[in-house]
Length: 599
Ligand SMILES: Cc1cc2nc3c(=O)[nH]c(=O)nc-3n(C[C@H](O)[C@H](O)[C@H](O)COP(=O)(O)OP(=O)(O)OC[C@H]3O[C@@H](n4cnc5c(N)ncnc54)[C@H](O)[C@@H]3O)c2cc1C
Ligand code: SF4
Ligand code: SF4
Image (cartoon, rainbow, N blue to C red; front, side, top):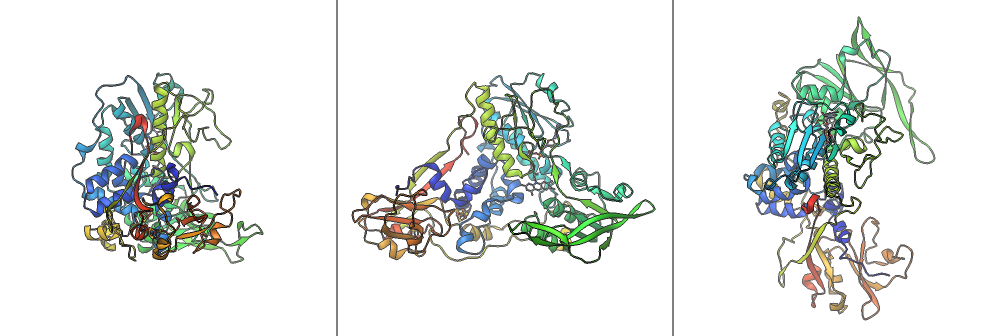
């Protein structure tokens, strides 16, 4: 079969599981090592260049990197990648001097941005240093979109938001106009901006049109509208008995906020089973820790009311049934309906896009789901100088996706304004450098030991529930941070094999603690290129998402095949190899953002 082309950027990038899974491709192991060395400001700046909001994301990220983390494959739980980011943010020095300087002069191009959420702010972060004049319009009275309006202060303090939006403002050339809704794209287009970025999010909360909805309206609230009223100080109390309908993260924020605003008996009631709920496991855990029961398999049938006042919600009890193709259906369980009395209901059953301010006759095409037609690589709409990103482009997701799409849209806007082909995307920058410092000495800590994930300390429950503004998580202290950082397996320090140096002594095979390496007959060329190689390895390579690293034909006619799946990056193979055929080399990959900026 073909020798692995490990120098193609995607090959080793994929081995760094967390960085590959992160939508912004943050160089995770690099910042974790810097944290272990106490170099917090540098760790912060690596994050800042890549994900723009390390302090915010270190508290709130949806963490797609963690399920991918190699530590989770060799032990039970992944490295606490997200909460380590917060350590860098909390313990850094003043980083203002490390930020890009304002552009020497304006480049003469004007960009309008609709919405001041993370997507637009990322576009502004990337274009400001290039001399663009950026005007951000937002209907809210403050910056940061749903980061501020939806995420409750007990998860994310306001100072962290202000600090990180402040870094973007300080880049120069960024004007933020609050309390300024854009009510016509046509009128905005007519203002002759060189380009427009739409980062207006998915602002509409779904309602439940059930009997009693109108009669009891005064005590039935749409979750996301209610949360933003709490955030902006318009609501500061709720009834004693609260029912939250829905099973996503919005429901979790609604119920936990209710507990802090006078809700003593707060319940989350959800249609699906507990396991299928959309909320992240840690959000459910936090809610239950605050004495909020989650009742599942209950479908709301009606709001009950008396004298124009809500009295409760009636539920049908259902159960899950699976058809031949494994598809799940909810069917009546045959039990009597259940009534739950309450004073207020929060409806958190989903979020939608809404573009009432985009006219239908201006050439901007929408698809059958009323979403704008947006190119998934360039984020360009059917009006060439109008780009979309974040929740406005492909529906509600999360902050890190909004950031990643903001970076991509900024690349397109810059190329568009410079008259370049926006379809040609800049490749990432990648380097590969040997970490050898002596025969048994590497420039990274390669001592792998078992160690369970450290828990982030939390404020005492009674204290935490006293106010919506008291942050619950206290963050790792520095000794916990060091211990957690040492759980990282340095997946970016790659095992690099030089065919020509190998004498086929099998010493690496004997020393490898995970049985990753096998010398075996080459596989015949088949369509997938691997034939039966995976089964013939010393430890069969069953995880098909992970590649096999295969050498060219060695002098005996065999090949070296290494399963990347559970390699600990311990370097024992490279230490044992008498000829240096194995080397441990650090692979450092950064994405290329607008104008060649890296991060
Ligand atoms: C309750 C809740 C909790 C969440 N928690 C998390 C979390 O913990 N972690 C996470 O990663 N994600 C979370 N999310 C999702 C996350 O907040 C969003 O995915 C993200 O903010 C989307 O960013 P964006 O820039 O696309 O849009 P948004 O953040 O929605 O910002 C859009 C901005 O556009 C403005 N706007 C809209 N229309 C107009 C107009 N016509 N004119 C002017 N301004 C306009 C809005 O006022 C808003 O400020 C949560 C969402 C909700 C609802
Ligand atoms: S062990 Fe470290 S480098 Fe490897 S995936 Fe986990 S966090 Fe990333
Ligand atoms: S670095 Fe080498 S010895 Fe260590 S687990 Fe990976 S292949 Fe085996």
